[in-house]
Image 1 (cartoon, rainbow, N blue to C red):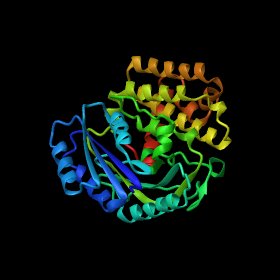
Image 2: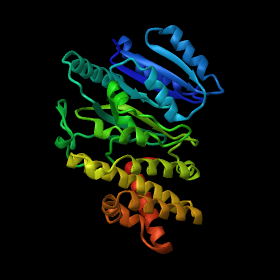
Image 3: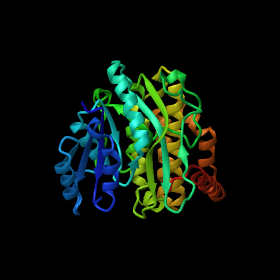
Image 4: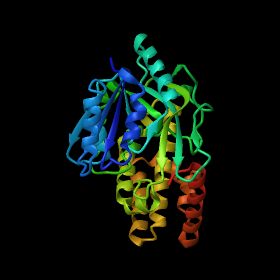
Length: 338
């Protein structure tokens, strides 16, 4: 039996993908590693096949036409046979000791026939040039080492939201909720985390520093210049998340509040990128995004627009845009991305 299927989406990843693979191989026969070659033109496929040959019962080398990161995740999910499913980007890796602890917990769920839908753990910003590694943990928000529900959660800080790095899903739950990420689109990891939330009934949190999130490549999708150049994709993802649910229909008040706040962060990031691009057409796109939210979900619009983040992102005129950019710069240093 495979307890966790790890999907590693790869696009021209020959320079760094082996570190990700090696870190997961520590799990032995309890894990499955699905290396998805998303139409690479370098030696990615050869490396994937090398590991498949060396570890035929653990590693699958899957080759597909280029469809983007989200489509590679979809492909990984299609090939997964493990009870749980985890995405590890090809330039990231996982911690060995934490992997063993998570596997032990998952084995307990399976043995007890407990259908825990979401497993959460900490992640670490492995940022180039930083001696102090920022760890995002949830011990002040989530009950530890016990199965719980959304009504049991506390209040998340701005820099503490659940990202792809921190989540492991029950594979069958993802399939039942029919998760399908869009092709040829960056930043769909937000959809991956956001869309399944109302389908998650039970959760489990381990206070271990599991996922190592590498930041430092110039071409990385979270590099600010790259994000601005792909502003239309960021806006598309945010619009998609707005249209997914009528949040007033979410029965758990705590989950509903969490999802509203997540949307607020997405609106903030989208807005500030439009502002920092210094392009008139992008300022118009920012306005259109807020108008879209207002039209689709007026109550959520009011909560976000007149919350702290919404007010900061919508200060009038050039002085207001300067304040918004400054607020973003401060938040960026605090949170640690880009």
